[in-house]
Amino acid sequence: MNRNIVKIFINVAILFLLFNSHLGFGQVNVLGRPGHVMTPSADWTDENNFGLNVSYLPENHAINFFMGDYFREIIYGFRLGFTDFLELNFNITYLPDRDRIGIGDRHADVRLRILKENEKFPALVLILTPPGSAANFLSHNALVATKHFDVGIGDFSFTLGYSLPYMFEVSRGIGSNLLGDRSLALVSKKDLNIRYLNGLFSAFVWTPYSWLGIMGEYDGSALNGGLFLKYKELAVIQLNAYSFREIGGSFGLSFPLNFDMKELRKYEKR
Image 1: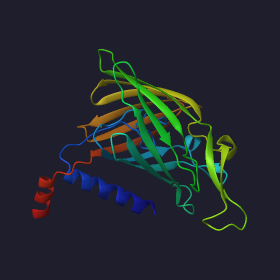
Image 2 (image 1 turned 30 degrees about the vertical axis):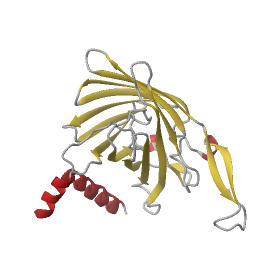
Image 3 (image 1 turned 180 degrees about the vertical axis):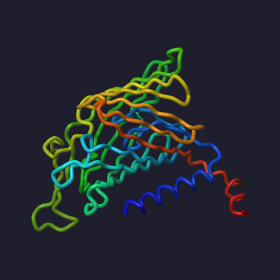
Image 4 (image 1 turned 120 degrees about the vertical axis):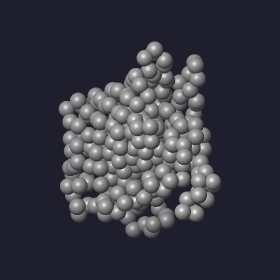
């Protein structure tokens, strides 16, 4: 199953590389959202884009809680920008050590742009996870603010956000059918062993050069750091230090959704 996911990931990336002459880049977190290591940011790409991301998390910092335990995990992320204020995100989790589980949490959320950054005010983004998922380990509902500063040597950004430590859960009564007798309840994420992004979080990023960035964050429970490298606005490779003790990483691509019809016709003639 994991090989099929990788094939789809690679084929989609090649398709966008062939049909897009101008590529856009955005630094992302382990879920493939604009962000840092674990935490999101309020950064937004003005041009609608499609993003692909794959991240590795060690066992002690895994997000998904399956069969009463945590395992090292690989998270695939897909990001689609519909408008200049709406973005849809989707994740698939794979656990290499638990073959009989196969694909773990399948998660979706939306990002809403509330305020665009200007000289006086930071960018403001709302992240919402719709209720109803069978596995809610990636669920988060957060309000995030990010502000960029020119520090003379590159760019510096600071992010502050708050993620609700509660979530909405859909439940069905005993003997109810699939369509009726459903209820919506507000439950504690801690009671469900959901440890991703609870409460206040913050982060900073210093980009001294266009191809190099250094970051640090508090994700609500731990301090993490990271280093990322960009290649010709095409790809980003990120090295993460979870609690500054264990190492993980991410690789991401981001493409603007502006298919050039001339390029498409050239490709068809080959």
